Amino acid sequence: MTITVILASIAVFSWKMLGYLIPQRWITAGIRQFSERVTVVLMAALVGVQTFVSANQIEFDARVPALGVAAILFALRAPYIVVVIAAAAVAGGLRLLGF
Image (cartoon, rainbow, N blue to C red; front, side, top):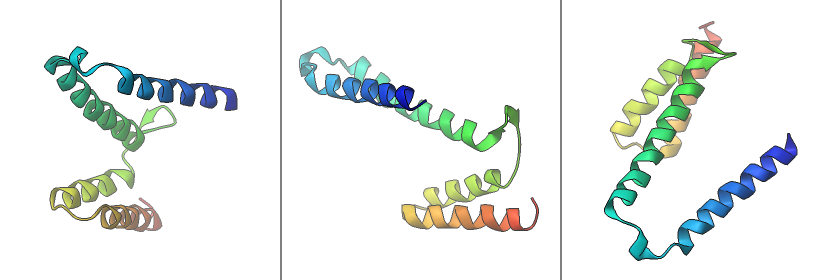
């Protein structure tokens, strides 16, 4: 497992460095748009999986309302630390109540 994490980290780092080495003239508007959008899509997929999936099953537990609170606070442009603390408090409070 440790070797896998180390190899994956090296692969990701090498791709990041490769991005800096590619000449600017090779990067077209289409490639730039794709790279901007794929980042958002991958982050949304990660949040979705981490929020709604547990033990290979879809579950709606305290994480879902916490994500909703975080989304509302982000829409209101609250500072990141406030969003994290509020979402954690919501999730913790709901778990304390047995949800």
